[in-house]
Every structure is written in C-alpha cells, then in structure tokens.
Length: 544
Image (cartoon, rainbow, N blue to C red; front, side):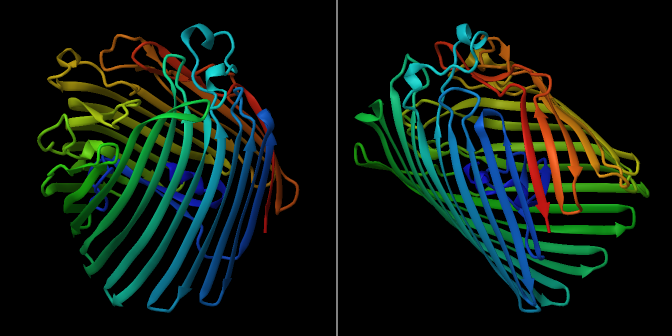
C-alpha cells in the first residue's frame, strides 16, 4: 500500500476494480479481487492544480504530456505540506514520475520511473478518557514519534502484435522501500524504531490469442523476487536502547494461468480459468544467526469459472466461482519456532451471483449476492517483535451489493452503493476456541457511498455533493470490547470555470462535522485515532 503515495490524483486516468475471486491474472494477495490504478500515458497536455486550506495544507500537482510522432513523454510533479488536524502531525511529501513510450508499429516499448520521499510526525492515539474532550491532543509520549520514507519504482513495458490474432504484453519491474519510523503506541510500552528495507523485482506477462469471433484464449503469469530487511529497537526519544528484531529474508512467488473466453451463443459467455502458484525462500534471524526455510506450501491450485447470460440487450445475469490464497507476511511465511512444521496456505473460495443493467449512458446498476470462505485466515500481530501472525481459523463472509448510477438529465448525475456483509469465524483456531461464531474484528457490516453532481453545459458552474460511510465494527475477535468506527462523512464542492482552461473551486470536507475515529485494542485499553473535523479548502486548476 505504501507505493500508492507515488501516484498523485491528478495523474490518474482510470481505476479498474475487479471484485471477487474469479480473475486468474493475479495470485498472492488477490484474496478478494484487485485494483489497477492506471495513470496517464500519451497525449499532449498540461494539467496543474494548487490547493490550500485547513490545518496549513498546501498541495500542488502538475501533470504534462508531449507526444511527437512515435514518441510520447509524460511527467508528474507533486508536493504536499500540511500541519495536520492533530498536534504533532506535520507532513512533507514530494514525488515525481516520468513515462517514455516509443511506438515501433507492431510493438510499443515503454519505461516508467517514479520516486518519492516523505517526512511526517505521528500524533499517536488517544484514550477513552480524552477522545471526547480534546481530539487534537497529542501526548508527550509521542513527541519524538515520526519518520522518513523513500520509495522508488521502475518498470519496462512491452506491447507487441506477434501475428494478426496473437498479441503479447509484458512488464518487468523493480521497487525499493526505505522506511525509518519511530513510534510509541501508548505510555504502557516503550518507543520503537522500525527500520524497513525492501527490494522487489519481477516480471508479468500475458499472451492473447483471438482464435475466432467466439473464442479468445489467454495464457500468462508472473514471477516476483523479494529481499527484505526488518529491524527494530526499543528507543528512548530516538536513542537506541536494545535491538528486538533483525530479520533478513527472501521470498520467491511464481504463478501461471490459462483462461478462455467462450461465446458459443450471442447471449452466453463462459470464462473458465486455472491458476497455479509456487512459493520459495529463506529466512535469517540475525540476532541469533539462525536460518529457517519457507513453509512448504506445495503447488497451490486455483480453479475459476464465470458465466454470463444476456437474454435482452442491456440486461446481464452472471455467476462466478473462484479460489485464491493467502500466506503469512514477514516471518509468518517461514517455519520459525515455536512452529516445528509447515503451515498450509489459507485457501479462499468465493461465489457470486448477480444482475447487471445498462441502459445507454443514463443508467447502470448492479445487484449481487456473494460468499467467501477461508481456511486458516491470517491476522498480523501489530506489536509482536517477531512479526508473527495469528490464525483466526476457518472464516466465512456473506454479503449483498447494490449500486446504481443515473443521468436523468444532461449535466445531472447521481450515484450510490450499499454493501452489507457478515464476517464470522466459522471454525475457531484451537488456541482460541471461544471465538467460534464471533465476528471478525474491524469488519463493518455496512459500507455506503452516494453522490450527486450538477454540471449544466450552458453554465460555467459545477456543484457536487458526495459522501461515504460505514457501520461500526468489533475491536477484537472475542467481541467483548464494544463496537466502534461508524461514520458517514459528506463533501461539498462548488466550482466556477473562469475560462475554458481555468477553474476555481471551494470544497468543504466532513460537511456535517462527524466526529469519528479509527479504534483498536492493544490488549489493555482502547486507542483512538480521530479523523479530521469539518474543513475548508480552495483550489485552482489549469488545463491546456
């Protein structure tokens, strides 16, 4: 998730969201789907935006493209500075990116480079006693908390037409993460220094064969190599006291898949797929000099199937099934004592059935029922010096999704969605038998979004109102520490096009001043991280 910081909003062209377990393109971490953030490539343009507002916030972004003949170049520069709503919450972040693509005719070759650095203070968490009285407060124990992070990402891209009906896409990438963080969660524990160094590289490729009008076949896969270093010390106001972790580990994950999109009849589409993954690696604890092997996960098979029926134009009924997997991160993927035997991967099986409606550009809607079950679902221990995981046991999530987007009049758009789910521990881990039947912690039952925008073509004004929210969640799998985290926050925006190229806007976030927060339980007390209150921002955007 850290690398999302390298993608500035102004540079985003689209976001592809794939829900469920039926997509074979991705293996590790694609437990319930994937999100593909696609940034601008090609074109000749200049797009810049500056924002200023509450809490001493200043944000500037500039995105530009130059396309000359077969060569396209795209650049991004983004800077953000804010004092934050909380005391001791300063943030300073700078990132930039460059994209160069050359079209050779039957093939296109590209290079993307991104780099960013950020420095931030950490205000820490508030107790039950203080969350209702002074939400801006930061305790003295957090006065030296904070850190610095540097991220780099480089990738080579190839798109090639090998024959009239055969095409290849391939990407090679390398990423680097350097994170130096000081954090103290409460007065009950010492401050920690957490030093993270991660170097990942890999290859992703896919071969597409359009065999006939009714058949498209695809084969592909990916291979990734990780070398990670995780070190921790107990510290006193950023002065090291004792080393508590020094882990050096490698992880190799490789997967391959085949998929076919078959349309034997105009109204029927069947998409069978199969994916397999293998995991390798080794782990060294530099504090004691001992090395350990990765868990023998074997060959992880993941069958998938999707069926879509379109009885009339604009109406589609669909169903899908798929299997994905999860392994432990950090030391949780290795046979490190007290474990003395290999741990099987957590296998996630998902089902979904739904209906989609599309009536031109003025109406799209979807309704679906779904279920996902997992064997041995894993949960990270937040403060464990070894970096281990807990096994929740066999879990089950069931839900319903409803969403719609409507454009009843030119310039008027409305949208909304509601997702309801129940996430429970179906078979408890033997180490925690009393959690059987309980809800999984930090999973809200309801998630809602809604919005409306009025942008008449004959006027230079644009007005928007949108919001999102969720219901409360349990703090622990014991379900005995109360439910927290419910909110619904609204954002209102009014914009005026001064010229066809320049727009001024004002935005009010958290319009109703909803006092909500993220809450967790550290084993002794509840700890709260409050969200921003009502805040006002102004912006100017220029597009050429």
